Image (tube, rainbow, N blue to C red; front, side, top):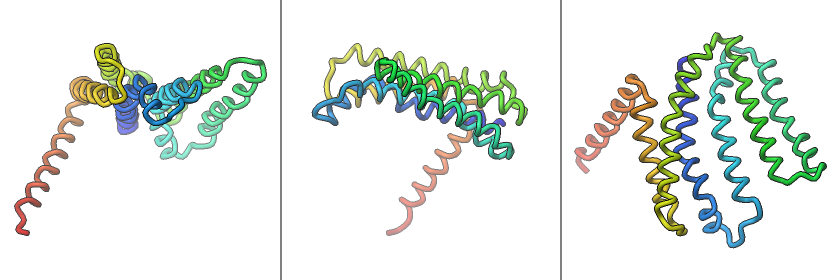
Length: 212
């Protein structure tokens, strides 16, 4: 369970490092990539990134459920909710609603699917809700807020240019990595990263010292 909570935390944070500046800079990136940006393309891209972030918060719980072996009820519940997005979206379009309503339906059903994983694992694996909130939600909250503030500040400070996303991404990622290290990682995780970096540096130095 501890490994699953750690995976959920880092799944979200690693995606957030890329997704948060992308959400802010989607208009300039699409204009750089496409000659003519389709209607609603910016909205769809942003919503897909937000939906992916929501899904990452609990997706590792699915791996834990597979390890336990109680797959049937879990799969039926989560995938039924996800599939319901299709008929509900079609119904929204049939009733004359805007196409953006489909993406909001998608977001709602993905959130429901992400949330419903938690009570399943509480029942089948002994997951504690307190541990999930404390080790995943709260640990990802500060870096997420910091990256949002950094991205917003950079976008408001700099003029809109085709290549502003490079500065925005650098500022957001730097702020995110710093706050992840200070606020999200425990001492064991920090020691593991330092040991990994030390091993990489040692191997690099050994390769440099080898005679050609």
